Image (cartoon, rainbow, N blue to C red; front, top):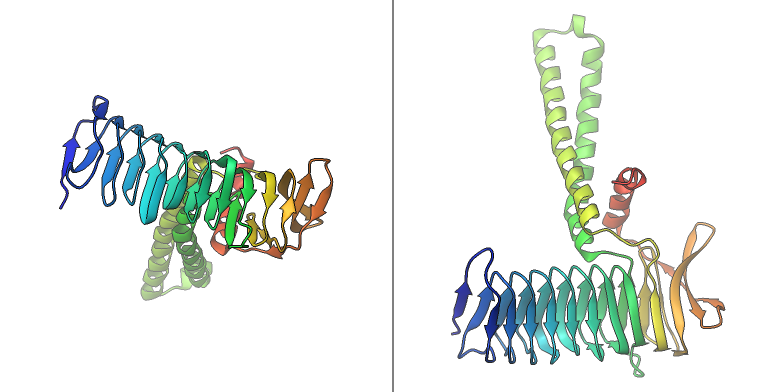
Length: 321
């Protein structure tokens, strides 16, 4: 069993580990910046409250950085490795790993059989995103999407996964509370219209209903405030897009917040993939390097919790909050 060396302290000095992190040396955790001058092996952990830099490769390990995470030798997570960062992530390559990053993700050569969720832009400008599931709120920039084999690749832009998680919990509770407040006030209304005729028991019942309605309203307001705070913290861009330099293979699902399209053949050449509207109906379109626009067969995509959350957030967005 590995051990963990802790380096406590809110303002810890930068830590340099002059060897690889493996089961023999134990895990590494510090509240400050951490640099590992080697690899991080299978089953190990490296954690930094600030920046985490790994000079070598990363296997089926768990990495966490409070700010930015850099892996100079690439990540091969073997299906169980995880990387989380409060800022950006940069790596040479990323395969068989789950990465969750608040900022941008930049990978030099390939994202393969990975799950990537980021609040910024995913960039693989010299390589491919293939056989992976990606949610990148700010958009995707790459050379190639998918594989010649047609292996399924799902790439979603314009949706912030972190906001979606808040909405998944908050929206059902908000809707339940809205219904409860309306029901209680509706039940109390007949009593309040004839207060002079109420018996003591009726007055007590009416007051109980109004008190319960006020309590439910207070809880509802708290949940709405939390949703607004999450929207300010995470946010969603208004016009995210895909920018692909060379090829979109067949079998790639291109998803926006309310529509998606799956390619049925290879599409060569430089392209931007955008969300457009025909009246009120959204659709996915490819814009080539000449500016020509080609709509793709598009279907509706609905995330009900996020759709409700966006409606709830509209007044805050309109007022600039």
